[in-house]
Image (cartoon, rainbow, N blue to C red; front, side, top):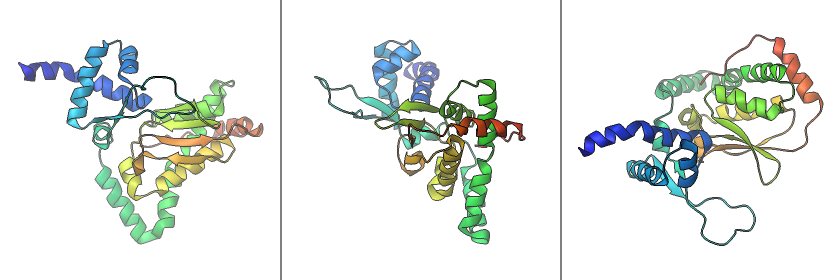
Length: 237
C-alpha cells in the first residue's frame, strides 16, 4: 500500500523538485503557492526528497537587517538531485575533452568552449529584433533558458545578477572550467560590459551567478541587433 502511494506521489514530487531547479532555493510556503498545493503536501514531498538526498534545507541568505522572528528555511537541490535532470553522455563528453586537451592542449579546449556558445549572441539579437523594448540581459536569460540553463535576471545587492538555476554541463565543467570561462566571456560580449562570475554550479554552488553592473553602453543593443542577420546556431547542452 505504501509503495502504491509513493508511485502515485512521484509526478507531484517531480514538480516540486523541478520548481526548485527552475526558480532556485525556495521555502515550503513559496512552493505551495507556486504549485497550488497545500503546505502540508509540500512539506511531505520535501521530507521525502530530503530523505532521498535530492534536496537539502538551508538557511536563507539575508541582505541588510533582518526583521523579528526566525526566517523560514529554503530548500535547494543537492548534486544528487541535479543528476535527475542532467543530460546523459557526461562520461563521453569528458573523455572527448580529455583527448582534445592531450592532443591540442588547454588552448584547444578553450577554443572548443568558445565555439560551443558562439550562437548565443545571434539568439539574443533575434530576440531583441522581435521585442525591441526588452532589456538585453532579459533577452540573454531567455536565450540561456532555451539552452537548458533555467536563467533569470534578478536585482542583486549591487547591480543585477544573472542567475542560472541549472547547468546541463556542470559535471563536465567541473573538470574543464574553460566551459564556464567561455560562457562568461560571451555574456560580457553580448551585454557590452564587463561582468563578474560570482558562483558556479560546477564548483559546488547552488546557482551560477553573474554580477551585471548597472551601466551599459548605448551601442549594446544596436551591435546585438546587427548580429541578427547571421546564421542562427543553437546553444548546445
